[in-house]
Length: 237
Image (cartoon, rainbow, N blue to C red; front, side):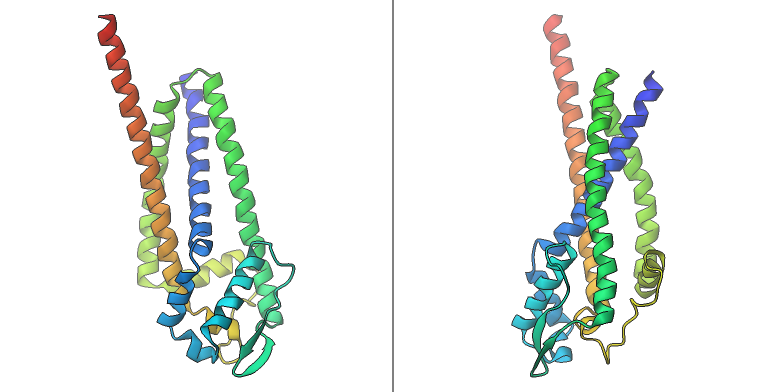
């Protein structure tokens, strides 16, 4: 019976990691639009586009609203090079439609992970397991495995971000419409590769901080539980 109890424990741990990862993406992308402005200034985006910061930020907010499903289409009028026009072209719209599908799919996956975590917790309670011990141990093992993978990924990103970035697109997209020509496309000028690299660091930092926070919470709860059992035994004695 005790071996059976570890299955929901690991399902809970994996679900928690999925929740933390997708939430890290969402927070990094939506919590602070000032970060986009800092990135645009850092990479000289305004000069490349011949646009004002106000117009670039308007385009950014509308694009991010679209990715979240809060806009029906990706058509945003802005002043580019002194001329008012639609910032996005058909290739932009097609590719960002695919990106929207990935993003909304991730949000749906997070909802599923919450359901799995809740079901796993109920299963542990039904099995009368030592819930705190199993969850904390399963989480530690799962994070340990993840840490090895993140270390390899981190080395790959540090050595050649472009190769990793390209591989990501080749895995998740079945066409080459994610490849843009900066001479012809405004969107890729607004979103240079350096911006994506900085976002990876931002998302990674949030994710690792979340992992550590949960680990500290589990350790704290186990310490409190152990202390409580010790005091209970002392009182009986």
